[in-house]
Image (cartoon, rainbow, N blue to C red; front, side):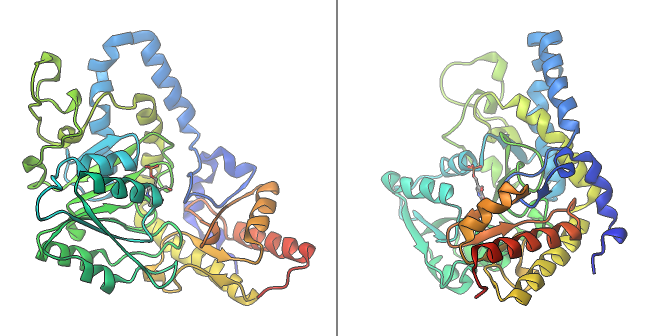
Length: 392
Ligand SMILES: Cc1ncc(COP(=O)(O)O)c(C=O)c1O
């Protein structure tokens, strides 16, 4: 039975224009745009037009810190510990630049289910002395935590891992990995892109050293803003070599010579931040805070379970964990002719995506109705019937 009439989170639907015309099941890729973004983008243009260069001191300079704190509030970070950047790959590069890979402690450990962009970055650090160990898994759904932990040893410097695996939505056992890493003196960099906004994330409880992610998926914040949290106590000791004037303690003194780092979140900044993207990120962050991540999580568990049940009835393979406690917001359906089915769903305004080794990914979010899930599955039924494909 659809529980839409009792679902108080559906009150947010009217704030997302695209929901009126599509079945939006793709927040794992790009969250729906809040209508408020029109005003935010206008406010940005208006400020630039009217205030010109004065805008920097009237708010733009502090914007990356303010938005950092808004994201920080969602992950239980202390104020002034989250900086904003262009994308997650940049965040990983800033963290990498804090370390020297020429010494004995130079190993980087992650699993083969990490997001590829992050992998390409770390692979490229071999030329800077990093010994990269990519730990294989038994399937494309679960990370073999034990195997990953065994690879973390006294020579390990960094463990850059996904919090929620993008292909399958498997939630990693972060606590166990952090415990092992810290025991041998290694640092953990957690990529929570597929986690923040759909599962509760608490940097203090997880005790991670670094955490990064972007706002464009589950936080409905649009492209161009990623966040980097660095654990207080560690942050002051680090001197990122990928740095710039925004990280300087007196940026407007324009001192020549070596960097003199500021304290707090801006210590990890580089050059001029992406001001228009920061404006556009705020409405989504504000709505997520109002909706409450715990409420979003409860609903997500229920709706992903519904998708699993609908798939099971049809004999479809589900490439996502069946255990709700280990499952994030996405269900990957390994359908026959998945790529064709995906194209047909898109043609009929059901927005999903297809990823190799995953299948068709469907991601209900807090604004999704149960009836939309039933509708999407009914279309898959129709497409498979039209193509004459029997369920496996
Ligand atoms: C887990 C994860 N990390 C990183 C990214 C993207 O990284 P970037 O912000 O560098 O484009 C994605 C995007 O799909 C992702 O799912």
